[in-house]
Length: 462
Image (cartoon, rainbow, N blue to C red; front, side, top):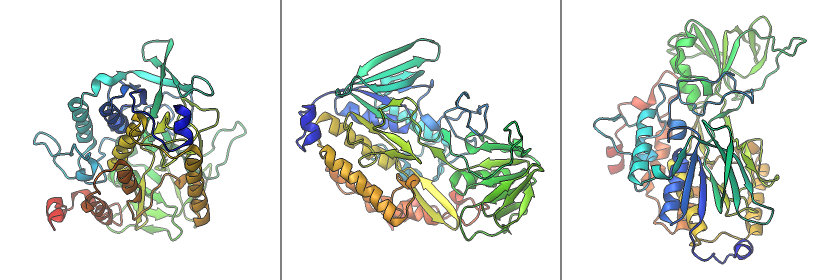
């Protein structure tokens, strides 16, 4: 039955499988709900004591503020205390479980992270998902039983136990998130003979930013122009002596931001010196105390062993058919929540992972595993992946943008909807998404989330 599935388009006989889901964040919960609906036997492995993934605020930071030391004790969440969502709550909710305002909660159109966590907790409770989760079970190895079987060994350890245990599953879904392993900006530095960085200041990644107080009266260089960079820049400028933002865009020149007495913009960093200077590509410089890297994250699956079949190369996870299935291992191994959208407005890069994508991916793979939907044969899936790579190469898109979806279209979501045989998505979803992006400000001094013009009900009626 397995070989028929791989080498032709005939669906498998409808069946119930024993499935492991790695992670109990938003992706893991949605995957578990859809698998349960399809009659699969589901176990969710969560290494922490709470569900919610990155939406669980943790005031702790890592011992290595840059996140480069592989032996560091990892803090999963990258949440800072003041974080609010960067999409309207109507786009954050699921198709059949809207993100409604509650009188005793955060009723803002762009609520804070605690409200999102509450929403996920309510979702897990209402769909009886909590009973599926093994809390404080950290997965340390996922590997096929042998070279020809589609069964997988999942090995884990508990927080208290020193020994490791394992169990065999028929399918594994990876939902461990991708906001934990920092990506660091690269620029030349001088080193002592001992190999130590000679720049005397402190460097941190935004993964380890929580509150602005440690930056009081400091001169800070902030690298990046995404949503987190925007938020952190605005927040620390209220306490820092100076904040200098380094941007990658080619048309950036040294300037002071309007309506901001202590924020300057520069092109990228050229180098740092042992006298404390941070020199930018246009020759401007500043003697800084701290450099904050708001430079994103790497896809990271330290537990996954596929003998080179699935790799992460320049932040491209592949090969993956439609960002979900490795052709050679489909459908027994899959990934949920890798794609994201990015849109540039006035030098700011607005990135988001619409929950709609995660929900549709989860529905698709659950039905594929149950035999109700068929995948193309292995060769066709591999060919589709190669076509994507070739198109990216011809259009000059870097490999690390593999999972970045088209800026102005919802083609991927509509493709998934078509696979599932669902009614077409409502027009307002796509329109509201791009309407929201257009309201992003041109500098860090404006809080677009609280503009008085946010009347979503009126907008939808119009």
